[in-house]
Amino acid sequence: MSHTILVWSITFSQACLVLAMVLAALRMSRGPRAQDRVLALDTLYACSMLLMMVFGIRTGKDLYFEASLVIGMLGFVATVALAKFLMRGEVIE
Image (cartoon, rainbow, N blue to C red; front, side, top):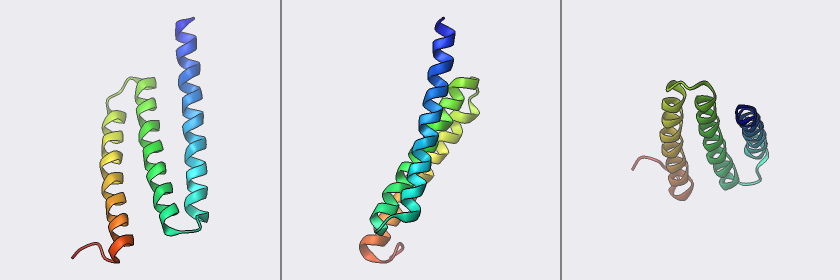
């Protein structure tokens, strides 16, 4: 019974994360302002990072955890660069 509950909870969490990614992609494409689009992009990379971690839990492979780490680092750098661009109009001074 414990294995069945684990499989169903992982499947449910993957479905919820995919739904969150779809909603974030919709907000990113239809956002009224640039700040909304940046926040949607931030949500999109965080959800994709969590989805990779859930895949890693499901399969038991380390590759998914490393991929989620790379997604997290690149997403953070992209968010900082976009925020700086929106504040000052340039990324590199």
